[in-house]
Every structure is written in structure tokens, then in C-alpha cells.
Length: 142
Image 1: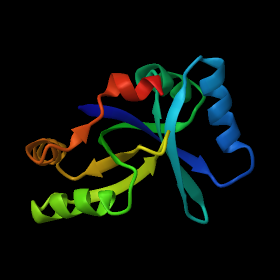
Image 2: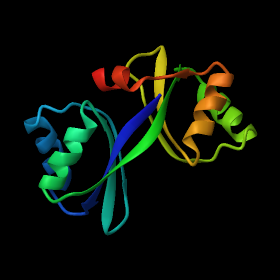
Image 3: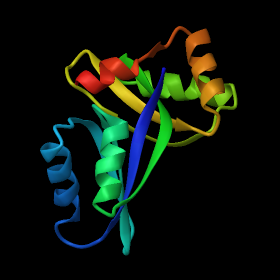
């Protein structure tokens, strides 16, 4: 249920995001999901890829500052209120979410990538409430 996510620190200058995507392409690594957060000086690219360990090596060899972190991916109905329901459950069980991002491949379901402060507790709470967690192998296929 735990998924490896890459966090890549990028200087805020033209072409840096393209460099990362080209490196992934050249290495045959698929980017299944990603999010970019930026400040005036740098950006953080968070991404789920088909081969996180290899992607880490490729990026390190290209002198990028990169970290592997553990996240959880929740699949929920793609309807109004589904995210609120999941977040209410987590909040009521005192699971703190550091950040999240979401993506949808169809009209029926949405995938929500969560970075909880306590990943084991988050997984347990979601499972106890019969919430559908996405396995890493399924996510990497997207």
C-alpha cells in the first residue's frame, strides 16, 4: 500500500522541468502522476513513476537534488464530496496530511496521493473505513 514518490528540487529557470521529463523519457520511465509546487527561488516536482529506484539514480547522476518519500494513494469515487468524506475520516482519527494531489483517469474514480505525517496510521484508518487504497504496482501501470 505504500508507494514511493520522488521529490525533485528544481531551480526556477527555464528548461529544468523539461530536463527531468526528458531524462525519464530517455530512461524508459513512465511518469504516472506529478505535481509542481513553486516559490520564487525553486520548485518541488513530486512524481510517481514506473521505476522509482531507477528514476532516483538517473536524476542523481544528472546532478538533481532528489529524495524518495513514501506516500499513500487512495482511490475514491469521482463525485462531489468524496474527498471531503475521506479527509473528514482522517481528521476525525487525527491523521495529519502534510500535502496531497489528485488525478483522474476517468469519470468514475479519482486517485488521491496523500503524504501523511504517520503513514502506517493513515493506512490503518483508511482500511478500517473500507476506503480503497491503490497498490504501487497498479499505479505505476497508469
